[in-house]
Every structure is written in C-alpha cells, then in structure tokens.
Image (cartoon, helix red, strand yellow):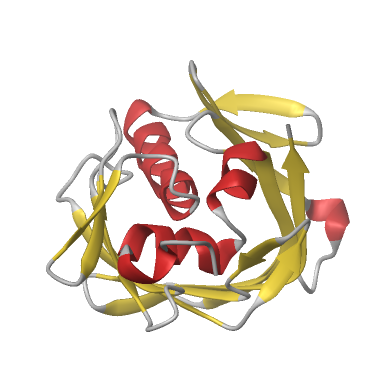
Length: 203
C-alpha cells in the first residue's frame, strides 16, 4: 500500500487499484466478457467487447451468444454524439439515449478516480461536468464494492436510480479491477457483466 494511503480513504482506494501513478497513466481500459441483460420480456445472454477512454469516448460490441459474432451490434459514444453500428452501417442515437449511454459509461471514469473524489461519511463522492455525481462504497482494503448513481432515462422519462455492485478480481498492466459488475435499476436486477480478459492502455 502506498505511503499515507492507510489514513486517506481516496488514496487507499487508489492503492488498491494499483496506485495513483498507474491510474494517471491509463489512457483506456477495455474487456472481453459475457453479460446478462434482464428485461420484463426475456433474459439476453451476450458476448461483449468494450473499450473506454474515460470521460471521452467508448465503443462496445455485443452479440447474442447463441447467434455468434456475425450478429455483432456496436454502441459508439464520441464527444459529439452517439451511434449504433451494424454490418458497417451507422445510425445516430436519439439525444436522450446518447445522454443515457454517456452517463452509464461515465461510471468507469469515476471508478478510475478521474474526477475530484472526496471521502464523506464513510463513502467516496465524486462529480464530473456533464455527468451525474456518484457515491462509492469500499471495503476495509479500499476496494470498490458498490456505487449509487442516478442516470437520465434513455427515453427521456423519469431518471433511473442505479446501484452497482462489484466483486471478484482481475488484473492487467498492474491495474486491479472487479471481475464482476452488477446493476440494479430502481431496485430491480438489470445487468450483470463478467470480465474474462481485461485490457489496459497506458500513456
């Protein structure tokens, strides 16, 4: 653990992930894994390949497991908008959905401590321009265990109260990251991601 980290909850979390110097060098993170999406109609099991430049851009390729990668659909968020892509053809996302996805994937920038973060009342609170604030919970070693996050609805309706939980461990380039992420929306389980391979790009 880094010097001084034991008395500073934010520094302790940075140390648990591999140290602040490493976090500052991360240009992008990504993963290959499997996801489960639960809707009132059905449960989808997806393969996923994702790359994120924190707070800047992201691309996530997904495919229904039983259909294989030939049916890959891509979600793309750039500073100037969002798109879906399939078979080489792009279609713009509606503004509400683009905002929702930007906020969703913004969480990973928060996890990397890329926004000003403070320890308040036993939690880590952070905010970044253009995104909702987040509240993290950690264990005694500083590892992130949960997050409370309120995002804009993709259809422009009521905001969605989300609770993320993190467990397991996977590492790459010195970065320690949760292997499994779960999301509940308004108290209802919605999404689970299990990472099989973590990728880290350094400056």
